[in-house]
View 1: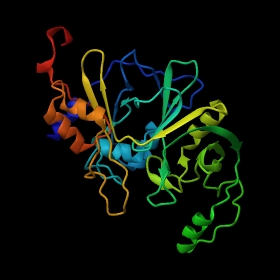
View 2: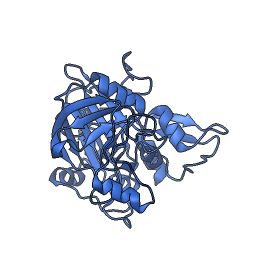
View 3: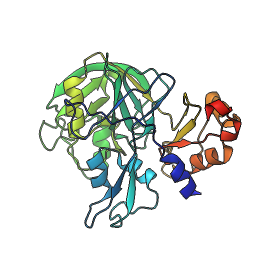
Length: 320
């Protein structure tokens, strides 16, 4: 089952990777797809070398998220992947079905999409988001960038200080800028909720592509610096939570991309949590053009990569 699905998920749309000279070396920048299409990027493959490092090190090399790399390679040891094994690097994705404007963050994907104004491209960054828990969950919202600050200080909220206190850590009222500041060297404030949510860097060597923050959106240092330098104040920010995406491509292919939904309780297993389908997704699933068995497999596997679920027997000859 998994072998068949893996083969189907490795198709490519023929787009050529386009890295702008102004981007950091590991940013993934892609030309926008043609009208009616939502697929961008190309998966890559990595052969694990002797002493090749952990999945976290490999994720950082290709600038993908840790959980995204795990979902694309089920069964791989995250700490000591077997030398000689071939890993799929999940760089292909379906653009979220929302306006392609400013920043779009899909919490379930642990990805940030940035559409620079006046440019026909999208830049995709892996992110860390809020931990499981009432006061640390990153909320969905439509907002805008209200401020940018280099070398920020960190003023932990009372809830954050209490949580650290329970772990035996006494946080100062204000953490100064510098290597001990968990916000890193750049911060971008969002206007909603009184400005308590930020995009910021990190002083940790892990956590990108995971639920690790106190509610803010965390990026790798090169990524937050590039956004800081290029993102105008006032840019629209749309934060959504969509674990399943689908697209009917101009050539008739039907693609679905399934991510693990975000847990709501500590005992939840994201791999088996029910995925709620909206009316559009229900219609996509029920369509004669969708191969039901492969669609069900994709929803079970939750690889986080586009999967071709086309029922080719239902297509007209000219669409084949």
